[in-house]
Length: 438
Image 1 (cartoon, rainbow, N blue to C red):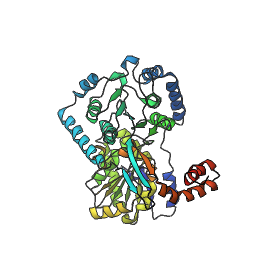
Image 2: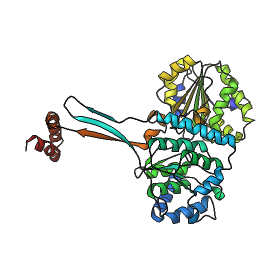
Image 3: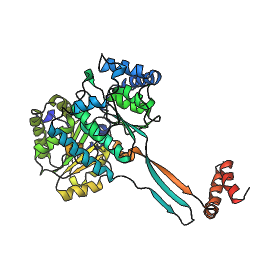
């Protein structure tokens, strides 16, 4: 492959890099501008008409023969489909689920309670939401791993009702998805998808009771619908196209790095793969290795479009000092393909990343499936202000305050002064009346 037909090339030491890098960061990889308008119309329609609207859209987009009687996936249907999964895949899903559960149990926050120097008792307690809705993509993009990543943390958090929605084009249930739902412990399964499924979860229909939080990946219409219903329910995040940033020195095997870059490029033509290196010859070798690897991929057309349209190679003078560039990109996945000590040192400097994979033997795909960490991660530079899905997303923190007469006497005068300063007399009186300052 001619090297001038590859991804964008940037040199951090070259004049004009800042402008070119800023333009790269500002690229819009989102889809059609009409998506939000269409999703808003669907959400409003489902809110108004409930089951009838959901059935109508499902007939239109997924299954012409669909009717209200087919909305719910029964346990028998789920089990029949799940039984088709080969033993090796069943064992792999069970293995992954156990690791995800074990990791997320370590993230459970502990309730706090103490008495401060004034005698006021303070604390915080964590309680799960009552019901969570999990969106699972269907059709050709069926990801049982996402079922585990969304449902297992909710179960660990203690959510008592977990509702899964999944589109089933032509009425066909994906065996792996059904098995994952069974292993993870989904309480209800519904055969719907798209913006209409998000609306049904948020507002409820005649058949589906509403939930309190919606999580899970989906297409642009699903993302737009989640944005639309936020406030009525909580959401995890607005997922954009997948991303990977690989920081690699010249001591790596170019074929390994090429495989890592393509692991996200194959998701979608809008996905983004970026390589940061301090070795130009190595970068050229990776470009050639990508071309060779593309010949072996079933999704080569998608991966090539992503690599050539959104990929980038950034040459830096000192790989150990590239954290400002990594932080500016704030990628969903960051691989540090270098010796362990160097990877650990660089990771300490990185502030913005959805997940970091350390060392030459830690491909991002391990995090997608069996590491135990969560693969629902912030995209589109959202790692600057948010993190990946976890048990905390299914918990609410409630503060506790308990004053004694003595501690109220210690705190009250300052509270009264602030209430008066803000012109909120009733606030102040609720304190002063207890201090006998009527």
